Image 1 (cartoon, rainbow, N blue to C red):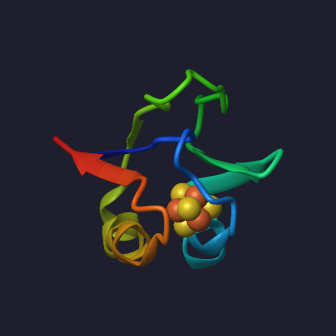
Image 2 (cartoon, protein in one colour; image 1 turned 120 degrees about the vertical axis):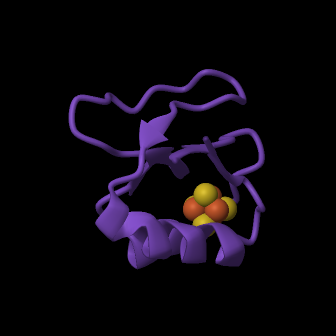
Length: 76
Ligand code: SF4
């Protein structure tokens, strides 16, 4: 499974980074997925897609469910 953040609707509250700092990283008030070898970049809506390590899946799912902007997307 993979995860990405739509920065166009991110509120920048930082909840995702608090819940799962291994996968989410706030930069200039926007959340980016943060994974080894993946540089946070802004792509105007469709953010970077990062593979979710198995041991982080529950934390990423929880972050997505709690995200006030509803902008964390998990997909195959
Ligand atoms: S929890 Fe959602 S809205 Fe808040 S910073 Fe993270 S991605 Fe953005």
